[in-house]
Amino acid sequence: MLLIKNGLLHTMENDEPLRADILIDKGKITEIKKQISPPKQAEIFDAENLNVYPGFIDAHSHIGIAEDKISTQNDTSNENTNPITPAIRGIDSINPMDSAFHNAVAAGITGVMAGPGSANAVGGQFAFIKTHGRCIDDMVVLAPAAIKIAFGENPMNCYGLNGNMPSSRMGIASLIRQELFRAKQYFSQNQSDNIDFTLDCYKELFQKKIPLKAHAHRADDILTAIRTAKEFDLELTIDHCTEGHLIAQEIAKSGYPAIVGPSLASRNKNEVSLSDFKTAGVLHKAGVTVAITTDHPVSRIQYLPLCAGIAAKEGLGENAAMRAITIDAAKICRVDHRLGSLKVGKDADIIIVDGNPLEINSTVKATIINGEIVWRN
Image 1 (cartoon, rainbow, N blue to C red):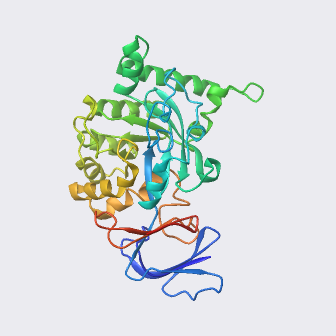
Image 2: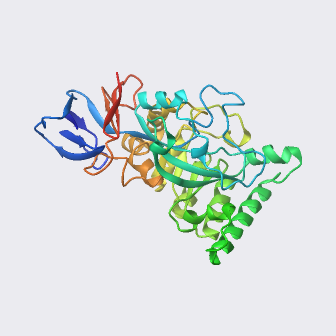
């Protein structure tokens, strides 16, 4: 049992912070009140003059797959021998011993969406995990959490340069549509006695429990992702959304959310030549639900609050930027019933900070995951 006393709570349930105590038991928030008398068995953390926030969330990363100490052996984020690999699972490649997990915890990042890279038109299954643990099975919040698809330069370069399909944007879209058509046919039939491993993995997708997670930078690729999801009546997140500011109204009309970034990275491909921190703000003002991503290791995961802070400065605004790495990120990742805000009944994933975490000179004083203090400064 843990009692956080005297902190200024930014619950993300309300716009205004409140001075209150938080009682935590068995990994959950059990009480939030102005004054809570300490139970005899409770550890007490005095948060006087400190700010208390829900743990931060990176809604798109390759943490533990493309490891921090990167090499051919340590980057296993793509099964780039086949452009269609829906059955591969991120949890089978995420290494909790990756040093990036320590960096994430120290920066107040308590939850991440992690999974395969973008070499394949259909890349496999993402999982939403906590950032503290030694066994990936104990860190999982939701798996599968999304099916990765990818448009644009990455699949074309991985396969087209070798004379294979896809070598064009049309080829990528065609492969994805063929695969979804095949899966739709599969689920329209009775497969109780004939399970196809390469298709049964789409079950939660066609039940609308999880989304397609679409790597799409250019405006035309974003619109192709939307068109494809609408054609098959599927949920979708638009990941990266680099040129989203050019078609903000169209994205808003689609009803799909955007996971924007990495903006703190080089413009190393043609399709990211218009990358700008203003994109998140333009989308938000158009009515799009927005999360911020580092796309770790493209930008290192500990810079997530910094990315949100720059996006706030460039038009997103401070409140929306904070929501983009807490409750809105949790909603996009479909874990907001457990994470993303300080609320009785939710997981006790909490950070305690000595200032505004979107500002560079603020320091995380403590990170709490599942009710346990896993980092102290």
